Length: 165
Length: 165
Image 1: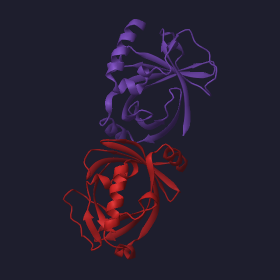
Image 2: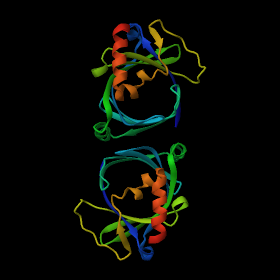
Image 3: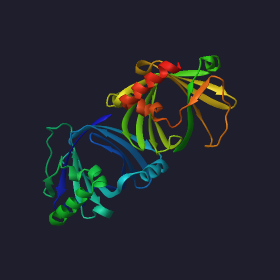
Image 4: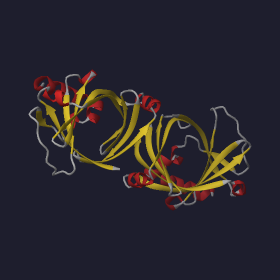
């Protein structure tokens, strides 16, 4: 089990692209969604897959359990998903000793771009690059779980993203 | 993913004990419980652990995905269980080419004994030993999920088991 401590931001511009060191196509779906826990399956570049259990109410710190699973299991589990399957390309961008993960959504949420940075502690400092926009840590509309399962979230996001991007 | 086809019975007597070929102490807990799916963690003899996802509404046939996980993860997940932790000793009893699994519950459900047999298909035939009691396949009170999470189930089971055992 790992403690996951992360902060989430909107993204102002494409300037991060020149510093991206890798990218992967992610398809992810939720198998169960409850108030304080969820189970997610993720296909990475169609060639590997992971099952992730997150437990905890805090948006910033949660217990996370992650296991490699067969790609075929992931495809079968995805067919039992609750809500929609989220598609995005995740780019890794190292900045001053931290790695930002920039998620560029495709499909239903095309136009939405979100950056996450993983921290050592809740007080951990990090450099804010100029392309980093408004912080949305804890804004449930931007959680992938909500994006996958909540129609209201999708309306709001689409409204916001057309203004912000 | 495996299809799980099984039938469940109460047990009339202890006669199966002389034919048991192995036994294991199981502790199991539910991480998520939904109408048509659940996620379970199981500790086996305290030395190995499995995470199991079951999807499907039928009591007799469900999709089952099972993964070996670290014992420490299982212990941590168990501490986030929904409902109570079920404790039982599972005995394996081969009868005419099929294996019956006899679960002898401990702790909260002490006194309850349930036999399950896994089948090739819903029509698959099997020999019924004399110690096999009333069939309870599909009786939700006897699902481990209900035993773990539903107080009403526990009351009913305790009522039934005192008469039947």
